[in-house]
Amino acid sequence: MTTRGRDKKTRKRLEVGGFRVGDAEHFLDLSKEERRLVQLRLAVSRAVRYQRKKHGVTQKQLANKLKSSQSRVAKIEAAAGDISLDLSIRALFAAGGGMRDLVREVRAIGRR
View 1 (tube, one colour):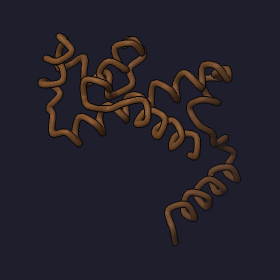
View 2 (spheres, rainbow, N blue to C red):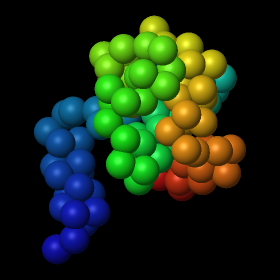
View 3 (cartoon, rainbow, N blue to C red):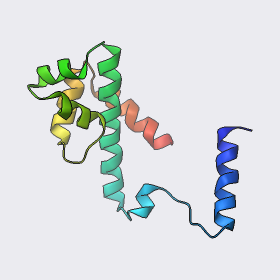
View 4 (cartoon, rainbow, N blue to C red):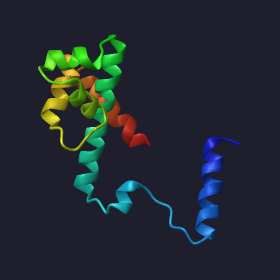
């Protein structure tokens, strides 16, 4: 049985047991705009991590390029809400990525 098949079976079993199954967006009752912002943050964070690793750069090295700290780069890669999108996008560029990388991640998240 595939993972997707097990997930459906588990979901059905939980629903029969009286549980409501959903995602974080529905649980938090996010507006359409808030959902899109979360998706954008997630796309940027994934693109930063991918580009950083692709180019063999450590979080510390990326932090030095940004004149920031390693812990801040970790927060960028975790899509933390207290990190500005400006800094996150600067990190993407500093890691060797570009707008195409961001668009690719946005599209990938939209397909999920």
